[in-house]
Length: 582
Ligand code: SF4
Figure (cartoon, rainbow, N blue to C red):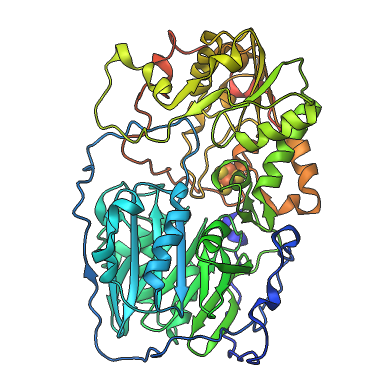
């Protein structure tokens, strides 16, 4: 779908109408098993939805003073731009996670906890911005949430309104100044933003802004949003956010904060998830995944709909439509790999999806075997589904070390192959003499798969049958997921049979594309499958993917294609390969 299909409609702001006080807070909450799916197509205008019974004691008031953003970088050492990250796992990399909280006196501490729950979405940096007395205070740093924050850092973030971000750099390198949330001051106050996704027209927007005098401080695509807000002439302020977002193309689930408002926005295609919940004290919470709501005891209420802007302030919650699109394109990879299995994403249980993916593989690609194992952690639920359907025991044949972090030393060529053993240890008692089915969520370059197969065989397995709980990845993602260029994707260069030979397994099967769409049923047109089909809902328009520092360095786990086991296997040209269609 071409980007020109974005047809902005006039966005108008509805007046918030407080809900009756006696309306229970849970009136829109449903048990996770029966969560409603968003109804599509979107109505052109969202009705006034609900109102929080906010409990903050001192409502924020507008102020004419110019807030100053305090910046407290973590005193932890951080990799400079030239450091090399060897923690490349031959997986699409997680994107980012965002959280926003309005109306809780512990907003920053709750954000901190929520970021912990979202840590799997980004480990390169974390930050929280909170509002106190109309001043935006920010703490950001490079590293894990637990590296960046401590008690004294959180003490610097008082107030009942906060946003937070965990970063994985899909655009912009990993330097400290790129760690979000970003805060900018302008004529009427300050605004903070945290963004999950990738803007496909970032370069064009930035070039236009620079032509007209904007000066950029970071290499992140998110900064263009702040510049667009600053130059907007729309009133009131929230309409500046709408005005800015109408110029964006690509993927964005964002939370904004001003001195008195929390705003959540999801792009019209809804590529990245964003959910809304509420704590028992009435505080409103937005988060990338429901697992963050669970941790801070917020009840899931609904998704922020594709193309929706939800504004929360002391008068209530109101919703307006950014740009309705009849057919959302939500990222199916959230269900395959990114999200935690205990999350509800796009109205579906991630656990249920993965288990069904495994069941489909057992039904459509059966093989005689003695044991089913998973590549931990993301292959576990699909492996459970496979084992249950096949009637074969699931066992823990590979143990993942959770203590192998990034290393910033370059392993010598001789010890590179130890890398995968650092992360995954085979269990000989499970594998020896067995015909083993090993389930993984995806194959990207194929380099890790070849090492895993070899590990399992070295542990004594008689046969190794690889089952992949996703279709073959043939295209790079431009919507906030760090995948290699399409030339580096093994399924873009080899047939399934050739990949089987390359990784050394006795058989190999992927989740068939038509089975995936059949499983999704009526909802299937509402998902993006571009990395499996090459059909991009929003064309990248010639923009180059921004790579992160340290991509594609041989860490002994992934390795450059040329360095693995004697080199690259020549594959058929893409035109000769069968490509699944979405
Ligand atoms: S291209 Fe793939 S990873 Fe990217 S949004 Fe679409 S389904 Fe998700």
